[in-house]
Length: 422
Figure (spheres, rainbow, N blue to C red):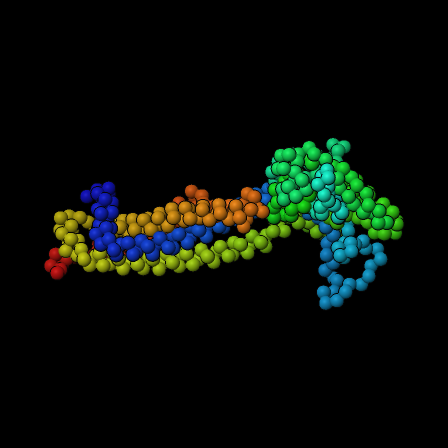
């Protein structure tokens, strides 16, 4: 009997007792289905986070702020320092000298400081005035756009990226119709006088994990900052909330060295990955726990395979003796029952994966259109051929290991004793 004949015989023998085989396949199905769903959730969320990181500059961008004073007391207020610049919230500000020092660090190509801006409102035509929040990162990095183009600093034109959620609210028909239109932005200066600035809608950005505020190019940021500072006494502290440092592409591998140099200068540099690393760790931990439960279910199903095949060996004892008497070796007997176990594992895992893909895709589409509509591009369950193949392979391996004991028992049968078995 050649290997192909052994395989065909194993497949046909699997269905001798259909009820017993079906129950075992269902047990494997449940574990494989759960494992496929949890793996898809992990892949979907990780893919979305990676896409968000890539869309705003990835690993070559550092957010730099003044380092937190580790010597400051944690159980009470810190002593007053008349030389320290800070915002109303207590955050230390960066000065022009700080920006120069950051720019001088080896490996940093460019530094763009950001200021805290709180415009009063935004208005398009006579469609009413609406509150406007500003996302400082949106004006600096590459943003995921729904329409239009990225901001152009140095163009001599005030440009703004509108969040997609603002478009219909302030009077545009859709994202495409907003491109190139002029909006009015108002801001109040230090003395309480309100000023307005006109800006061109350069693009419309998709809302993301990193904020849904509007993005401003350098010209518009500078214009609003100048108006905000009108009438401000020289004694009042001014500075930058943070700076975004762009690392030379060839020096990305030296990111830790650059962060250490910034720390020595009194600054704290963080990549986007650093900032959301804790979120990824929590998500990975949850997915890992869910996967563990799925694997436990598969192990339990493995005992079902052992039971199914042990009973099959007992029922086919005389048949095994006959095969041995006709010259079939112990190795082929072992392979026959091992193939049966593997085939049962394949059936359960393949069915579980197919149903998981169908159910998961439907749920993912429904969530994307409803609950998760504010996060365009997020596929909550991402099924990939590699992950599905891996899951099926793992289940077949567990099935093979579970079938080892019955297969060995069958292979060790004495042909004479087996033929006498009643």
